[in-house]
Image 1 (cartoon, rainbow over the protein chains, first blue to last red):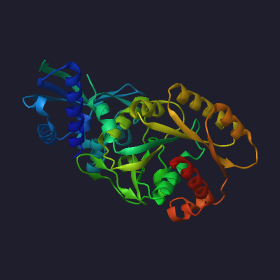
Image 2 (image 1 turned 90 degrees about the vertical axis):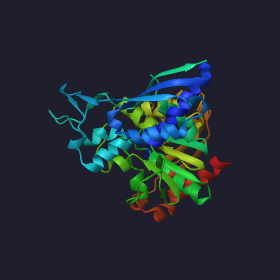
Image 3 (image 1 turned 120 degrees about the vertical axis):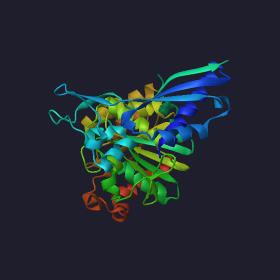
Image 4 (image 1 turned 90 degrees about the horizontal axis):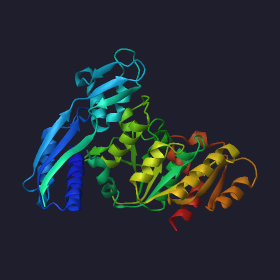
Length: 132
Length: 242
């Protein structure tokens, strides 16, 4: 349940930005979550609702999942993340630490672990709207 | 686009009084053994201690400690398990015995993720076993952890010290505290390292003679703590806690 830890980082960052920008009320926060994180969105949303501070009382959190895509550095092949191709333990390890994708995923064309995660990794605040 | 994980890191480490990166310019000088033994020595002295293996591509502290099948607990993040009296965190929980080839950006991302989701309890010391050199992990640790202090390990080799010299200069330029230099695997009475360390203006914390039996103590913490290596580390730990 490290969704809670990620939600804390979102709330803490939004609060810091609100303070810096002098925002008294925040109406909307747009969050992008990489598919590779395999975040349980219900838990993440619940954690956000539980953690929100006074200036976030009326905030709408919109969460978009960015599909994960890889590109092999050896042969140039591009492919998408398929959780179903992984064992349960391997998928869970990637959930906690997405970089271990390089441990459990190989380029389907040439077998190399030397690939780039082009999209769908990490968590980002895309925009914050509020009133001063 | 803002990465929110970076903002929470110093909050996660707020209850840790001292964070010490055990580092060197070169590999194979005994960083991991020093970091592990130092963590054990501090715990033995009664300090609440954590050990974080940051050598993501070549972790080895789990072998030194013989951690068995422990796993972190999930509770609003990741809680490192207690191993031989220290809170222990490593990529090994997720990579298992497999190779994890990572490029620089991946190392940074993994470091940010683990620092953002790991919930350390109140600690007197968090010891970080660093990968060698002055690339991504070292730069990230300096960037992300405001209160970081460095403890540097070298061998008596001029080649090892040449890289240490660069590391110390970088740390001084960046105004990062250097606790001192440990001279490991000493085989002669040469005063070269002591003399050169003095020139750099950092403390020479001690010299550890090559311990022929240390290999037999890998994975056996009781035996490790009885070694001449551990006795010297214990003396150095006493200097650090002052």
